[in-house]
Structure formats: C-alpha cells, structure tokens
Image (cartoon, rainbow, N blue to C red; front, side, top):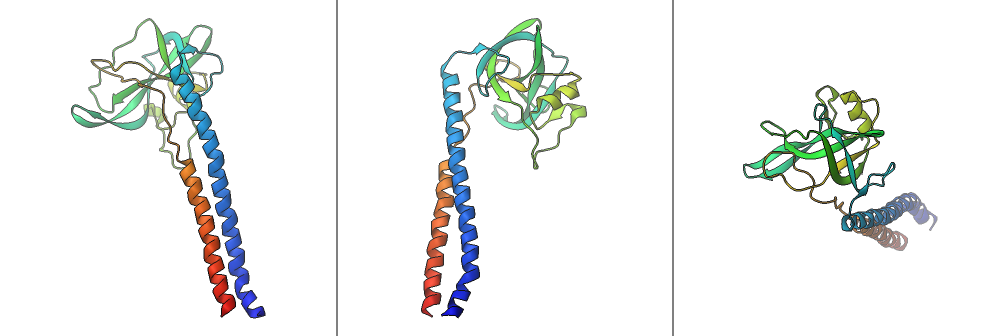
Length: 230
C-alpha cells in the first residue's frame, strides 16, 4: 500500500500545481470580463450622447469636441491597416497631426486613414477648425510591437510622447484624439465612423480554463483509482 501512495505523490503534486494555475487563469479571465464590461458600458454611454468640450483629463473613449489650429506642416503616420477600396485591398496608415490650442497643451490628432503609397491627396485644413472624436489613451510598446522609425515619423505604437519628440514638440497631451466624421467624397484622410467596439471573449476563456481544471481533476481521479486497485 505504501508503494502505491508513493506512486501517487509526485503526479498528485504536479496535478495540484496545474490545478492552481488553471483556476488562477480562469479567475483572471473573470476579472478581465468585469473590466471589459465596464469599458463597453462606458463606450455605449459615449456613443449615445453628444460630444462634450475636451476637459483637461478626459476619460478613455470619451466623445469630445475641441477647437484649434492643425499643424499640417508637422505630421506622422501610425500603424498599418488594410482597407477595401474600389481598386481592391489597399495597405494604408493613419495620419497623425498636432492640434495647437490656445492656453493648453497641443493634442495629437488621428485625422484618419490614408493609403500607404501616393497619390493620397490630403486637403489642407487652414485656419481654426473644430474637431469631434473620441479619446484614445497613450500606449506603450510591448515585447512584440513593431519598431518605430522616428526619423521617418513612422510609428506602430500610439505613444504621444514619442511621436511628439519626433515632431520636435516639447510636450503634448498624454492622449490622442481619434477624429470622427463623414467619409470625404474626394481625397483623404478617412476618419473613424464610430467609437471602437473591443471584442469581449473573456467569458469563453474563463469557461475554457475552468473546464480544463475540471478535466484535470477527473483524469487524475480515474488514474489514481487504477493505481490503488492494481
């Protein structure tokens, strides 16, 4: 009998360790589910309401309105995005331009999508403009993020401080305004049409991890019974 229990010891320890890991992952996904539901509710409220004047510290995804002067002479690009066009799929990017505001920090503005290769006529704004859009908080590069090219003003992480440095701006607001509006009949950029709708798969992930935990326990119990009966 002692030998049988010894045969169960290390498999039991490993099973317990894996069980703790699987339950931890499932619980983490439950927490992420609540976090994502909060974000989706916040986006839904912003989508349903009118834009508000841009505050000093806006919340992520708030729908706002702001006036200022677009610095068309200072521009950068962000990301790589394939769009369907009458000419077929076209690789493009997003045009980032600073917006100078009286008595406040400049704000980096994502004016919208433009094709990656010319020609892509972007009409100059000129003078004072009033923009509507939503707030995108600043990002930080991760382990697998594509490398930025500050010299060419090409960025793959939406980091306002890094983009501002490449444009020669001493400081900017710590967020980006994603412009929303109608698709222009001619030319570019093409602004966002609505607030983003992040996917919410955390419930299915939690069920998967908890299901694996249950399966692990069942398999160990069946195996242990066979060992004890041998």
